[in-house]
Length: 350
Image 1 (cartoon, rainbow, N blue to C red):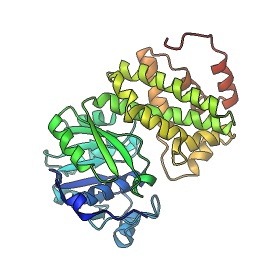
Image 2: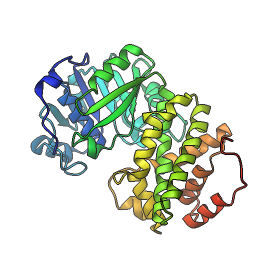
Image 3: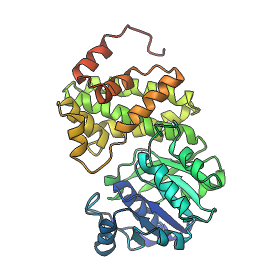
C-alpha cells in the first residue's frame, strides 16, 4: 500500500497546470493519474472499457491492471469523450499502447475534445511502424497546433503505485512547458528532471524494450549473469548508434531514459518485455505468450518498427537483428545466440 504523504509536502509550490486528462487505463496510466491527483491536479481518467472505468469509479481500484493501489479521490474515471470535452484540461497525458495512439488521437480530434491550448504529453514508449515516427511525432501529426512533450525513465507502475523512490525525465523543446511538467511530476517519492532532447528521450524509451526481450531470452536459456551483462552493454551501444542517427543526443542515452530504463527493464521482475523473452527462451511460442496476458509488451511490435528504421538508416544492430529473427522469422533462440557469438571479432568501440 502507498505510504502516507505529508499534506504540506504537496500543497507548497503548487504546479502551474491545474487539470489533466489521462488517456489509457492500463497500469501506467492508472499510476500516473493517481500521481497527478496527489500533486493537486483535477484528473479525468479515460479508458475505452465502460465496465472497467465504472468499476474504478466505485471501488477506487483498477482490479485488472493495478489491483493493490487505492486510486486517489481526485481521479474521475470515465469512458465518455463528452466528459473529456467538458473538462477543458490544461494537460493531456497519452498512455495507450503505441499501436493505438494515432487512431485514438484521430477520434479525439474528430470529436472536438480539445480546445487547442492543452499541453500534450506522451508517456507511451514506441515507434510507429508505418511512419517511423516517435509518439510525440504522431501527436504532432494529429494535433499540430499543440505543444508536445514526452515523459520517460525507469518507472515501473507497480513501484510508482507503492510510492517507492523513483525518477524520470520530461522532454520538451519549450523550456517553460518542460518546467511546468516537471512541477506536476515532482512528488516526495518521485524526482523529475527536464531535457530538451525529445527525440533522444523517445528513441531511447522505445529501443530499450527490444533489449529487455533479449535479456529475457538469455534468462530463459539459463545463460547466466555474465551473458546478460554483456547483452545489456552491447544493447546500449546499439541504442546510441541508432538513436543518434535519428537525431537524438549522445548524452541522453546515458541518462534516465536510456541506460536507466534499459537496466530497469532488463533486470526487473516487473518488465513485461523481459517476461516475454524469458518465455521465448524456455520454448513457448510467441502467439501463446501474447494470448496469455492482457498487458501489452511494447517490445514485440517495436522490434519490427525499430528493425526497419535501422535498415533504412544503415545502422548495424546485431542484437536487434537476433530478436527480430526470433519474433518474426521463427528463428529458435539458441540458433540466434549461436549466430551472434559466431560473428567476426571487432573493436569494442566500432
